[in-house]
Length: 301
Image (cartoon, rainbow, N blue to C red; front, side):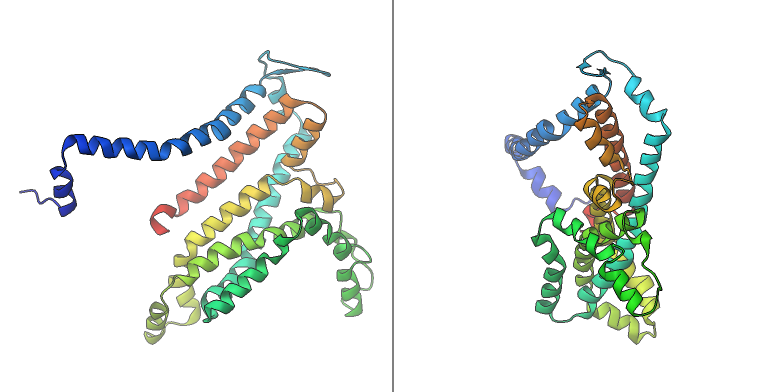
């Protein structure tokens, strides 16, 4: 004998015309969002894919389908090197933002009991965003230069005897700048998830004799994983599409896929820029899909 839930019984009692009206009402509610996403996301992406197969000549582009632009990308060590550089910098920045952001979020979300103080600390993390993005990037130049603040402090503390040249116009400077700029996108979601943990659960674990590291490993880290995944998605999407930070802090010595797109568009090579754009979009899609496989955000949030 099948036992029906009260919800199923109530739904079965609703007349068929009423159920159909409810269904159409739901469709009308999502229609504006579907139309918006189709016009401003799906159609542009399809257009970029289409343009990537156009024939590019020196001074013009023709809608004649060809694979030349794709062959030029995958047949060049320079462009493949830029792809690897983008992936490498993304992985490093993802790790550094997590290593810097998680302890900060742990302190704000779990150890600060006063909610007003916790909110104030999160606002302090957001204060740099009150200024222009370009100003925040260029502000690292006087910090990292040979006569910058960091080198002066290191020499004053007798840590180094001479200025460190590798701090500016290198890949290291790009990583430092991106870590500082995007760390807050890791801190926010993690602090939010840590703030939802019931203190009684941690207290019960302590009463049972668990130490901090065991509590962290078995309770805090698993419960904060949705925030880690959300932060990782934010950081990944922004770092993979970066071009300004790499250009400003590396002296154009570090080429990422975003820098190639800007250069190709400036040279009116739309087909090749579209190829790089498609590759970057696919890369972002794979990364986001991989993160979403780790944690079911719809269930956890």
